[in-house]
Length: 242
Image (cartoon, rainbow, N blue to C red):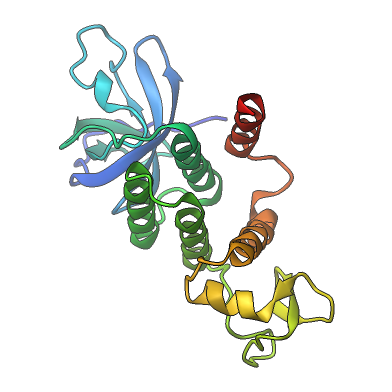
């Protein structure tokens, strides 16, 4: 992929809260970093000199660490001019770490560059806090997925079907990515559990299972045929541990 880098003298952006989503080498001492920022959404930028031995910012560029960052440039790839961190990285381990990597992969693949989406940033930050506190993973991920779909304009109400009729607890429904929920005898989604998902009530085991299946269906058209690396990594690690 070709990038246009503009290092002209135009003013640097104000400091923005951000997280590192992904990084890769750039030249001998730099990195190309993908960020989720509070003010500008997803931003790609060059961090020059960060891999030098005496770099003061090398340790800052790590996932799940809250940072403040400023950049300049008009091209597809900005240039970092200032970065600082008010705290250490949030402690994620085991399944919580894989869940964090999953969030990063969703953001990297689904967010368009430089479209301000403060709600996505807030949901991401809140989910990382929940994971760092080792709160229940399933509800945390489902809430983020549902929030992300809504903010991207691909969400559907879960308490009404495609005709505008309220979901009936004793009915069955199927999901269509273009119209939402549709009543159908023998379909896999039960109205009772859909209403629980709409209320963010994941106490019931079957509700959790249906919520996971539903969000996967909702995300599938956006993600395409390329599998999620984080999901495969989690599955492989779980199999080895068993």
